Amino acid sequence: MLIVPNVIQNLSFSTTLENDPNIPTYSDDSTYSVGYVVIYGNYVYSSLADDNKGNVPSENPLKWYQERPTNKWAMFDSFNDTQSVDNETITITVDAQFIEYFAMFGLYAETVYVKVEDANGDIVFEKTYDTVQYNISDWWELIYDDGVPQKKLIDKIYPYEEQKITIEIRPLDGVAKCGNLIMGLSKYTGCTLTDAKISVRSTTVKDRRTDGRIIAKKGMAYDRIIVPVIVDTAMMDMVVDMFRDIDGVSTLFVADDRDNDSVKSLSVFGFFKDFEMDFGFNKSRYTIEIEGVG
Image (cartoon, rainbow, N blue to C red; front, side, top):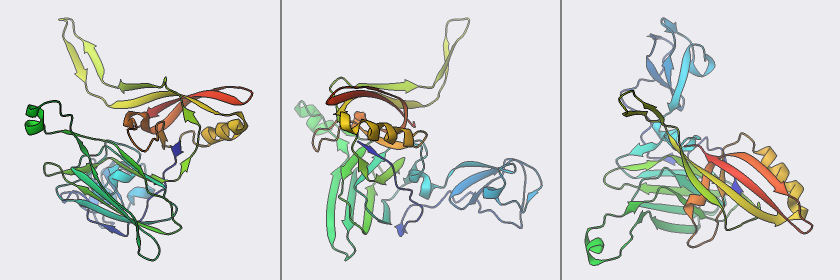
């Protein structure tokens, strides 16, 4: 299945630190030099010119460069490496409609608490997720294993016409982080077959010097999956149109949506690179290649 994220522009409540206290808010009355950094709206901008005065950052791309979202809004953009970070529990509340799934990527937390209330204020969903995984094989690991923090969390919360969704990301080792928080409705795309391929691609540039040593300029790693899917031939046109519509749109692709024991590596937030379908009389098979946002 796939989930096209709802655009989150308003939070009814948030405890997340808005920004770096060392970065000032943009002012029309101030004059900025090249490289000066300010906050305007939900983004951090850097000045591209000297004597930069009276140029609103969001309206003057030749004068200002949009660096990144502010800390509060970093989890709602399309990149995993721009994280919302806090030393305390990150708590947000979103007033929404028809949210069926939520997902988190670039997660670092001890637990995550999710609560959904309907229009009457009744709790219709409530769950706490342990996000540290332990692989215990002997007494030593039982006592001393610190566990492995899981970076992905995906679950179904059931849609309502009016929902108030509260999420608490509780810190691990004194810090809580979230790279992407995604909410939306699912769309059925068929059944995944067993020979899916999972890979991690690196953008690190490596240069071998004349003395044989390799110098690496660290880039970013991103997930890539190639998934074979079987679908009713009667759905072929709908599936083709669906993937055409999301070309260039950051989307959550979930190739394994089992309630228990699902393989989280088969869930990627990113863009589809290639889609190819083989026609069948009753059933058709297609292959989709997905590249994560990194």
